[in-house]
Amino acid sequence: MGGPAQLGGSHAAAAPSSALKVAAAADLALAFREVGAAYEKKSGDKVIFSFGSTGLLEKQIVEGAPFDVFAAANISFAEDAIQSGVCAADSKSLYARGRIVVWWQKDSKVAAPTSLEALADKRFVKVAIANPAHAPYGKAAQQAMQKAGIWAAVQPRLVFGENVQQTLQFAQSGNAEVAVVALSLAVVSDGSYLVVDDALHSPIDQALVTCGKDPERQKRARAFTAFVNSADGRVIMKRFGFLLPGETRTASAK
Image (cartoon, rainbow, N blue to C red; front, top):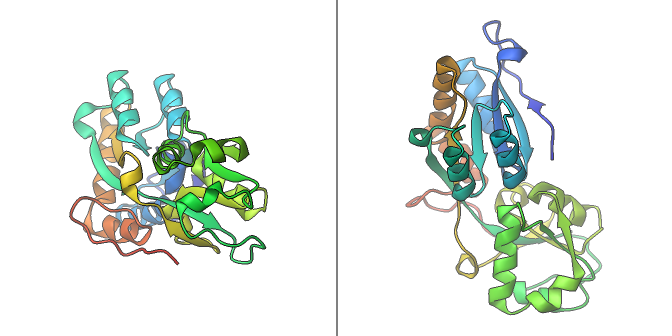
């Protein structure tokens, strides 16, 4: 799991110790850095992110980790955090529907896959996915392979990343020929990918929720979550392939 990544744009009124703390799913590692920088520039409020697998972040929050915002890669984890009493039910908002892609290096010596079903071919010695036990994108990858009828053939060759960002790194480093990862990471990576039909898996509906009891921090947290779904925030999110119902997709396979 990635550690906190401090962003620029701070000002005297927000010392690092009082910065807004956001626990965010690993598929947001690139998009939220831009969102955070834009929010800091507009509001002057400093934001610090911790990226990791949604399930593990939710566990930390329930156990008392002092996060102000939880950006989950699946709405069910946000709802679990609400049920535990540490996050506010009235703050829950959908901010994205994720997509999965098959990613490979452009200079790969292995013939590129032309479909998800192609991963059943043994030329793909290692196939990386995020751990389905706690990573929503890994669960979607498993569901898609099962529905495509290739899970039994691929399962013995799987390598599991702790989160979807680490999963991509497995393929980037050559430790796997291909990886099934988030579109939001693939669109800005130096590689090739194809988008998996989202009818093959349950929707990856992603939700934001604010956490903690301090009224002032709650106010600041809600301001950040509102920015994510504001016009300025949506421009950034859509560029990374994240959509809300009714939005037009701007990212495509390459």
